[in-house]
Image (spheres, rainbow, N blue to C red):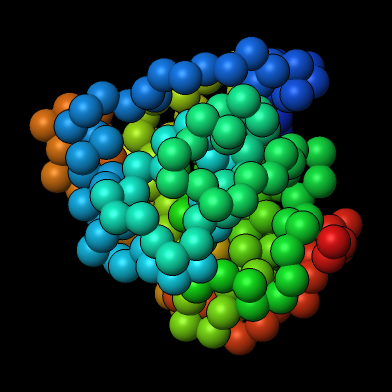
Length: 212
């Protein structure tokens, strides 16, 4: 397990996340070039079948609609506005990292420009491994754009390469994934970093998490 420094998962704003994310924000958080790069990456890794968009919003950054898309996020109005969504779940993963889905429920899980806000990311990644089918893909994309008061301090202290290493460590520590693959994606706008790994063996549910 990675030895994260003291204070790594602290945040400047320790207030209620539900209150912070309460007002709908129907805006893009990365520029058009970066959005295109994210979409191209998801096409490349193959976001297909039954898909879970983790920490989602009003857009899922997918070029092609999958067979069934479940979006999970903090704001009901934003999720309702997502035109690709077939199912919507309001959930605060910082309050409870457990995912309210059966084991092996999804072929693919994605997380777009949101992993930096997780205070228990290893527990969340272990839950992703649980709900993925064998061989399924967990694909995460991120940039240097964020709400800095809500991102964890360890993330803010790192550069793009360091952040790719942080996400890879989350996946390794969670268990149930093959070796993560990290890469910088072509973008003439905001930088886009991507990490993905495939689900292998079923991990144990992390301590403190529960299956719903």
